[in-house]
Amino acid sequence: MESLDKKVANSDPQSATSILEMSITEQTKLQRWLNRMDGVSGLETRGIERVPEELRHPKVTAGSYVQMFLIWFAINCTANNMTVGILGPVAFGLGFKDAVLCCLFGTIFGSVCTGYISSFGPVSGHRTLIVARYTMGYWPSKLCVLLNLVIELGYGLVDCLVAGLILAAVNGHGMTVIVGIIVSAIITWVVATFGIKWFHTFERYVWIPTVLILFILIGSAAPHFDTSTPSISTGVALAGSRVSYFFLAASGPLGWAPASADFYSYYPSSTSRFMTAAMTTSGITLGKLLIEFLGIGLASGLATMPSWADAFSLSTGALIAEAFAPLGDFGKFCAVVLAICVSANNIPGTYAAALNCQMLGRWPATIPRPVWSTVVVIVFTVCAIAGRAQLLTIFLNFLSLIGYWVIIWIVMTVEEELLFRRQKGYDWDRSSDKTYLPVGYAAFASFLLGWAGAILCMYQTYYTGPIAKLVGNGADLGLPVSMSWAGLVYPIFRHLELKYVGH
Image (tube, rainbow, N blue to C red; front, top):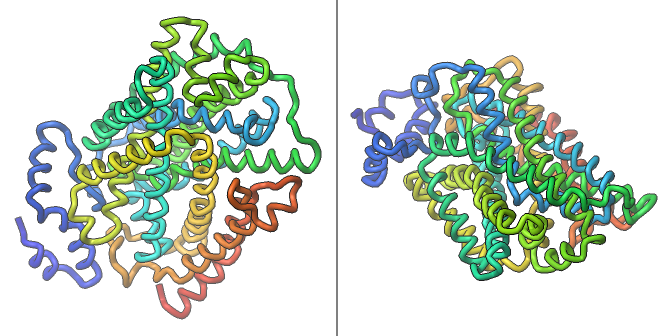
């Protein structure tokens, strides 16, 4: 094999840095052992380096697009997302119809944004936040990496916690929540560690038992849904609640944007960007709405079903288990299957988090992806055990914060592609070339200004911005304001950056 020094010496200066970064994982004994495992077990050893065309799938077919839809449907049609639905009536006081409409259109909005970002996977062969360098610049993009790690660890915490609460409730608390959390974490670790082949295979089939169980839940619980009681608030206060829940629902699918291209980097560059975005958007939307509408229904029945209210006072998992109670032991079996299938949501986040760890710098890049996935699982498992009594509080505060930074980055990415790269395009082989990538002044300044708008307009349990206070009892306007502020100034700042810096 050609030595690293020789590779660098034979390359032009603009690509030398890229070769150094892409070759760094070849230098460890552990990596060489993992490379041998690749041929035996299908363990994916590739990290954040670009996937060359010769190593991608030979062609894209109709089945390839169906697979895109199925993996996103499976990822999002999981019991943890029921919590988003429950928050509509419980946290915002919305009636069934108001909650369903806000959830519907908020989910569509967030899913469209994530679908757009996912389309960069096949055309670039890169992981999502490597693509972010072409907008944010090499160093500022690492801020996105850190923020995305928070998202993925947060989702890992919530996913394991939901599974643990359901398993504990079904077992009559003979199984502790901690044991349930660990069971879910082990399933996640196995698939995420072995990588993209195992991940695609798992997601291709796991949605089948999930959907069957959900239709059983509909038959068991839907007669007790309260679809007629109106929202608690009226007037401006009701408008504020609707806006807040709309953007809360949007934050869920938005949270997948920084990882969405990761799962498509092995698709050939001939893959249709439109179809990639369309399949991703529809998979996320349909998967989330099926489970979130059920959550809204369960929450709407709390006032008329004392047994549900008593169970909900214990945990969300207990509420789900109670909804299956009329089915006896078969209902318990259904709840267990639903809990196990939560790992379908946790696996892709864990996989992406391991890649993000490698993006933090040259030293982290020397540590193979399977090692990082193990570290990630340990971290969110410990956090889930520590926070097992505060699920709704964790989910509400965590989910709302996701959308702010993600939507700022997305709007800048759209403007970068449409306004500044329409003619020259992207050179995907220069993802580590600091003389080619944007310096990042424009993106970083726009990012900070967008966050300033979010702070002024956010409505959280721990803080309400001065502008958010002006709408009824408070409304979370952080997402649209941060998006609009960043979107207005980025073209100006980027034009100045190109004029005076040159790239």
